Length: 300
Image (cartoon, rainbow, N blue to C red; front, top):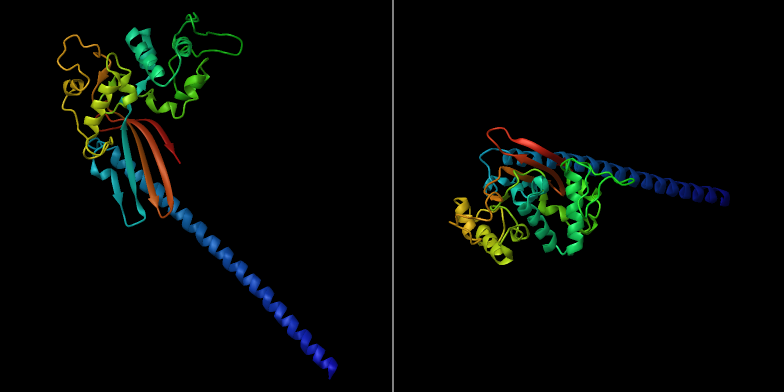
């Protein structure tokens, strides 16, 4: 009888052990299935978010759509939708435009900007001369510039990417600044668009200064103090915009040929959201006529 009792005890232990192993297996399987479900859900939401981002971009590329168009924001339920931001690329400093032909007024705008950003006099002189040597076609060195020397070889052509600026000798004081690219472009028409230029860019124009720059931006942004929203003030013409800078109606305007209004080049960022997943598509486009000209396309 004792032996029989031991057999019953062993059988019970084996049954408990088998039940434990089975429970662990079931738990592991459930976890695996849940992970699979999460993976599929995330993949579906990623595709959905990407599609929504492209939908927003399609709206923004329409020739009749501008930064204040309400359709740039759309929601499809609580956790699906897109949000598009259109920023005038013409409000930035077109580096190639400022350096082309070594025109003193344009060069001074670049120097004023670098000064506004905190660079010292000697740093500005060296950087601008090195930039001029980078974009000109010859191998003649400017006073503070640099031409071919050892492993250093200027391209001797206009900049093709803002990333190239970091390759220019003496560019460290500029490219080490946070978000240094934000006020530069290579895509605009060249003249600075008063409908979208920042205070930093406007301040660098001849005879403007920061107080007048802020006055123009405050008038343009409207009550919410943000560009690209429904309450923005749209200047009826260039003369109205110039009035905020103190130059309206002047025959001998020092800003002539340096500023404009409503450059057709835009930096468009469209973010699609599905659940907890966001996807973004970013383009620079010239909106001319019925067919937009895409100059840059990035996705993530």
